[in-house]
Image (cartoon, rainbow, N blue to C red):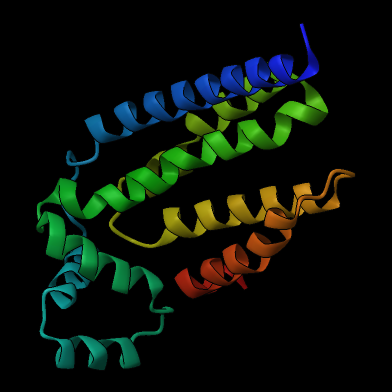
Length: 183
């Protein structure tokens, strides 16, 4: 078997592993996303996202949080509506991507078994499950931080790819634009 065919087989197996992790996370988190009712701060965010542009921009100027999540929520509710499941979907998607990033980050240095264990642990983390069920920017910020760490890991490795060098500052900036906790 030539080197190119072996690499294609490995990357296909890696893609299948990542798809399985993401699908399981998505299924588990979507199944319970609309069970708790919206909290007051979530409902206020949804209400502000439904206002006209003048009121919404006024809200962004007064809000203590950075604007990225609020703008995403406004776009998301315009497309998908304001049901509890719809407004929590960005958090579910962001939270479900984190175990995929953890798997990708830990597979090379620690092996496949450790990568599966790390992805499973972050998938079952109570705080990740809680973030997935909130219509707030915490899961999105955690996903941006995870992607930023993956880019940093790739930049610092011997095979530093140019795309990782390009994405590192962008993912870090998105994390900071999502929540002040990232500072």
